[in-house]
Length: 217
Image (tube, rainbow, N blue to C red; front, top):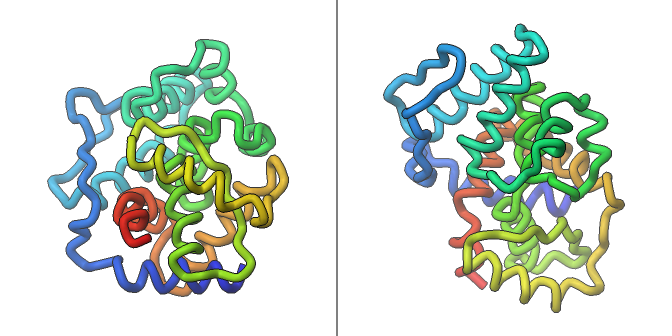
């Protein structure tokens, strides 16, 4: 973990610029649930504020409202519309540990739900984040590489990179079915503490820089 933590820390120190111009994804303002309001700030800070407000609303709400907030974050904000109703109901109602125990299955969705449980403790894990974590180890020629789950993506460049990764990662260390997410959180938390930031900002940087990282190979 120490080598990988060092790789992530150096990457963040190089790329976490004060103007936060590296994040280009907008929040759709046509609908913000339950009175949430966002200031006219950078897209990074708008997303951080959204996570904090969703968590605050979720923690004070009844079961029905909690489900509505989680559905908003997965479906409308996250753009994941392929979940069956019964699967989405699991993401709405299961405890944090129950969701983590699901392992790789649906992680791009259930990790979004976890952000509402606690935005300072849990972070999103999706195909772009996974690709960044894997390819940063290649770029830095890490000797003992750890393979994060290779997830399907709608992005063509990520998809091609993942196909290549499947071929070259056969001798990498593979974490247990439901171990990778806790390891990911430990990695983010340790890095955030050293850089006096938060895990969400690091996650967003890994997400935003995925294709740039691939292009460095």
